[in-house]
Structures are given as structure tokens and as C-alpha cells.
Image (cartoon, rainbow, N blue to C red; front, side, top):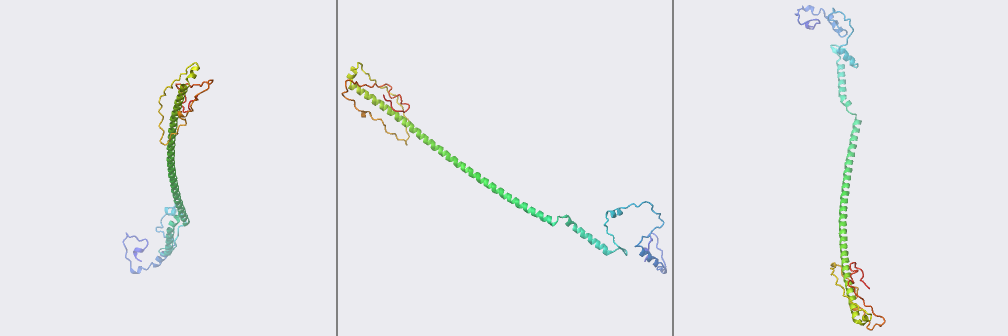
Length: 283
């Protein structure tokens, strides 16, 4: 052992040379001190006074108290046992490697989350499909309702137009019938007036025998009434009144006791019921 390895030697003091015989003089003392240094500490300065105050834990002691499971290595020559230190370091590395797995969810939770996510995705897909189908059906029904409403509107319009044309035709027919009836009434009035004149001409003595002369006045001319033009589809019916020539002739020799009554034509005969289109006037 050199002088630099001796305990208590300082590097500031000059090195004293020793004789070769004195190098192994204190080897026994050195060996005893070397083996006993691992069991108990050696006081560098035995002249220090004893420390009477209560022990105050340092930061290192506090850390040891906070970590009750701190690993204590067995002491060996020149330090701790290498195998124990390596085993402890390997255990620490294994625990450090397991920390991420402990913090991550367990496989069962991950599988459950994946299953729930798949179910939610399937439900959303079905919901989107059903919403699209409902929208398509609603749109189709709305289009069908619109087409039906348009068809009904067209049919109602055509029906109304057809009814209007029928009413126009009926109105034209009524006006044509009115004009025909007015003309028939005029013809009947003229025929009656002619018949009265013929009777007065044939039997003048009967009128003188009665002590009075019957004066037959000609009917006043009626103002012309323009009948409505009948439609082309309505054909005028033939007049039901017989002509004046078809009237039966008066008896040439009436009995003397029964004087024929000569009808007196009224100036306004045939005008009483002309406007309403009823049957001709008769005495």
C-alpha cells in the first residue's frame, strides 16, 4: 500500500520517504482496521465533543421514513453486493415497465367499449336509414296528394264548364219556347178576330133585330217583340193551334129565337197572357 492510500494522509503535506524495512511493519494493524471498517465506523477525530441534543432527522432520513419499503443491500467488501443491487434494479425496471399497463384500461373494459361503440354505430346507421325511408315515403305521399288534387281540380273545372254549357242551352231553349208561344197567341187572336168579322157579315139582320148594331173594332196592332234566337241544336216545335181556315163554318140558317152572339174583339185581346208564356186567351 502506498502512502497515498493510507488513512489520515493529506495531499497538502509533503511525502516523507521511508526505508524499505518499515513498509511492512504495520501491515497487521492495517489489515485489522480494513476488515473492521465495514462493521463499525472509525472516528476521524476522537477529540469531538458528544452531541447532547435530540436527533433531528435530515432530508435523507425523512426520505427513508417516507419509504418504509426501501431496499437495504447487504454490505460486502468495498461496497454492496453486486448481485443484490442488480436484482433490485431489475425488479425496479420490471415495475416501471408494468406502470403503463396498470394505468391503461383492462382488456375487458376495452372490449366493452369497443362493443358499445359498434352497437352505437349500428344504431346510428339504422336510424339514418329509417329517417331517409320516412322522408322518402312522406315526399312520395305529398307528391301523390298534389297530383290527386290537381286532377280533382281539373275534373271539377270541366264539370262546371259542362254544367254551364247545359244551362246556357236550356236558357236558349226556354227563350225560344217563349217566342213560339207569343207567336201562337198572336195567331190565335188574329183568327178569332177574323171569325168575329165573318159572323157579323153573315148575320146583319140579327144584329138589327136586337135593336143595336154591334160594332166590331179591329184589334190594335201589337208592338213587335223580337224573340230570342234559338240555338242551332234546339228545333222549333210545330204550332199546336189549328189555322183559322180550319175553324168550323157558322150555320147559314140559325133559328130565329136564338140570336147568335157576335163576339166583340177587344182591342187588347191576346195581350193579357202574352208576357208570361201561358195558354192563349179564350172567351
